[in-house]
Amino acid sequence: MKKPVFKNHLIDIVNKNNKVIGITSYDQLNKSMGYRLSAVFVINSKGQILMHKRSKWIKNANMWDTRTGGTVDSKETHLQAALRELGEELGIKKQKNQLQLIAKTKPWNKEHKYIRRYYLCQHDGKISPDPAEVSDYRFVDLDKITSFTKDKLKPGGLRDLKLLKQWLKKQKKSKK
Image 1 (cartoon, rainbow, N blue to C red):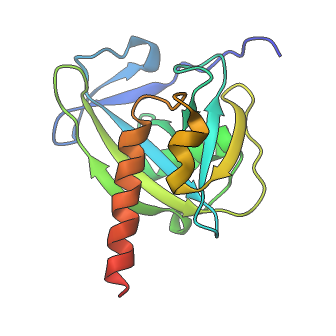
Image 2 (cartoon, rainbow, N blue to C red):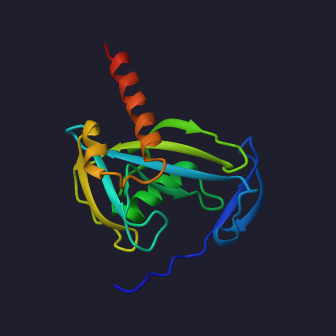
Image 3 (cartoon, rainbow, N blue to C red):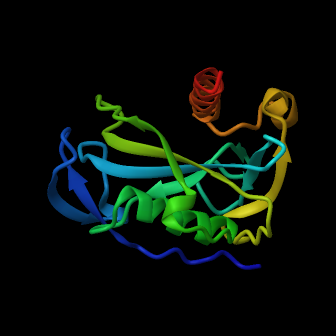
């Protein structure tokens, strides 16, 4: 497979309050601009998380990731972006009601200016990853991720995993 060409899409520039203040292309995005991100954790009915290995053509190449996702396109909602990214990267098609919002984060400092929404979906069906973005995937027990990835976990992966585990623990307590 030759190196893929990724589309240069438009994204909204937002302020700390998530209000659109401009628009730019993805290629022109810089650290002074605020933007939106969406992320999706995929869990199977056994409670295992879908880990995927990033392809050699994208940022953090050949590293394992705990979630799928990316930037929210202009005029798109966080949920729409989450559904789109899930389909584009992993070939998983879901409806809006099949994703559950589990966290909202708002890192806004000198290095990062973004507003991210994290979603969770359960999936036991077919997975058809885009080889331009994903080179491998596996369902892994949550408590075995660090040994599975052997220092090849994408930066931010442990932070994301902690967020997911806290949410799952909170859900378990609320069911008691």
